[in-house]
Length: 373
Ligand SMILES: [Zn+2]
Image (cartoon, rainbow, N blue to C red):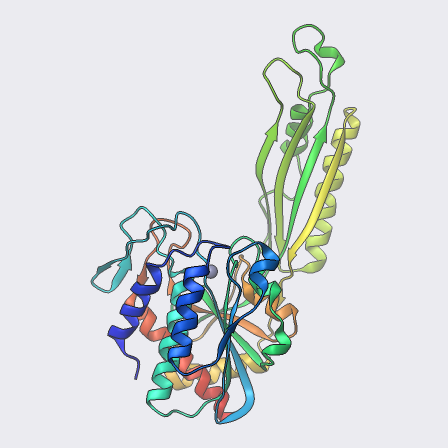
């Protein structure tokens, strides 16, 4: 049985631990102790040193009554800013903060749902197939923890990532590819009062290029772009020699993201050159997208879980990236299921206790459905 009070206590306890991206040491230690306390052999990988963080991913194999189909259950340990000294407040069914930090339900909710579900399954002697538990570091800002994983150590058939919002039963089965780019516009410096005609303002180049850039903002139903930062010039009285911008492009379609990216960069290049300047640029595929078809076995598993738990399934596309992108790309079919986190990455973040409980029921049903197979 899911233990509501234990679930609340565990959530509050985890949320109180500071665990910013690449500073997950305390959280990793706490989770390692919890898993060992439950009788599991957990270990930490060396991702922390590789990415310049102070903790690695926590990995644990929970042997079941049978080997397959094995599930990989995943949640991330890091939280975004402002996330130091979080002070969770319980208000009826809602857990929120005092308003000065995020709650960190993203993704402490995923972690506690995994822990409580495991405890409940074992207490009830519910049979299950092999499970692999992975708590990643540095999901926020780059999915670095998931990228560092050696998935040969967690040979699961399917992966369930618990890092999504929405009603319980909401499952992200589609997520975009993500490109980020930096473009450095180059002009010529000159004294702005004495001989401005000898200069070429990089700020002007960038402004003109952005003002009529193609594919800006919402491109189509499955594609978006943004210019997030612009920095240029040194001082007021010098014609700015350089101006750099940082942007991103997302699309569910790999073909489209490549096309849109190329069009944007070409536009910047042509605009700058036409005006006598130039650009240097850098494009990076931060992560690949994924699209799980409705006929896929993992969706059949979720449909069965929906029947067992009586929680309606809502398959949807998300605009964000998560560890799910990396795991799918590595060859394990993965979906991202809701644990009820709301208004994440803001000081208004909250979560419903009833949603946490229901997420445990849904995960229990997924594990039962896997055992039936
Ligand atoms: Zn998250």
